[in-house]
Amino acid sequence: MYYYIVTYDDKSPILIGPYTDNTEVLRRQASLHGKSEVHELPTANRQRAARMIKAEMVYKGGLVRFKHGKT
Image (cartoon, rainbow, N blue to C red; front, side, top):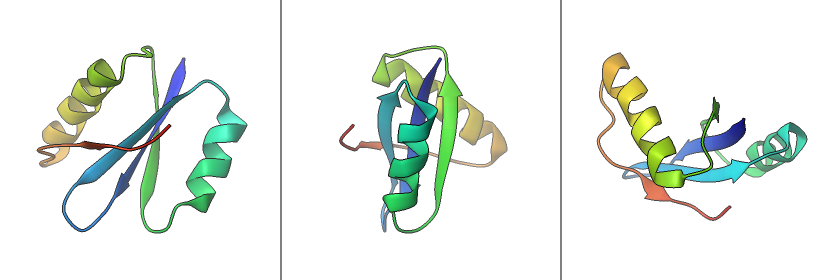
């Protein structure tokens, strides 16, 4: 499984990842300011991961577009 971090700036969410180590993800998440979420997904492909997270968030109430952050 691969881990992705979704964090938010003024305009849109930012997708960071993939990571393979849970401790590395938690360290990176702690260094980010503001709200962030960790998602565990079965793909290392960032575009596919973005589509999977979008589908989940659209179902919950409305994500439109991602910015891709550095890994």
